[in-house]
Image 1 (tube, rainbow, N blue to C red):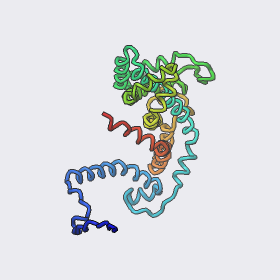
Image 2 (image 1 turned 45 degrees about the vertical axis):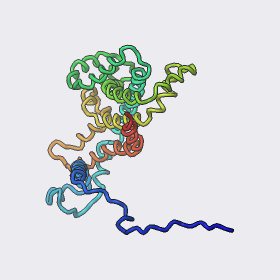
Image 3 (image 1 turned 180 degrees about the vertical axis):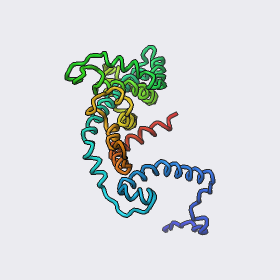
Image 4 (image 1 turned 60 degrees about the vertical axis):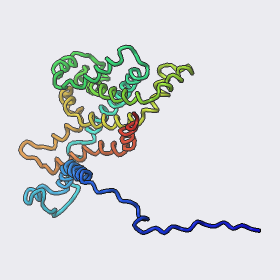
Length: 308
């Protein structure tokens, strides 16, 4: 005698029940999206207008206005801006300052943050408060004493020629950038390292790891997303600096690329379309750095956001 398995009768479902449920329409969410679009357009509008103006002849915009329909578009202003003021030389000057300053800032701040958050050194919280409070000091307040101090600090001729002082040297500008940026990075990294389990450091101590090995092989690989985010921000901050380079340098061939835009202006006439093309060229490196480090930047901002 054989038994046959019987299937349960299928339950008929109506099309309305089979369709996935839709999320309810919410006016606050619509208002939020509209607000975000307005803010995004507001931020992008000047950049897009500068790109549009840089592709048009000045005579055309002077006659018909910047918001008129273009008669001709070309990259002539970009070629002129690149070659007429020697932008490659100024780009190199900026990289000589920005790259070492960013690397030094990230190294010193990450090591100090490690000592404060994971090693629990005496007075660590007070040190963190002092680093954070240093960010509140306006840079313009110390211009005069810093200028006098830099004028009296000697440096070897191979570090600062021809002044042989901290003034008018790349080293002086790098040092002041590191001094002002370390506080912000220590504050961010120390809070980020607090999310790392202390058991990892304790296990490395049991294995005989010293302070340097704990920092370099245990903690540093875990904070790479935060370092990527900070590296992107710090490069943008230092790259766009105009104040310290003008104050602490006197040689025109050492100035950064932000000061080269002033060379595109003449005494009696300024071609703003040419100036717009130069501004776009100057802004390109920061945009490239952001897209290269975009994944690390976003992960550094979001990682640990859900940790309570």
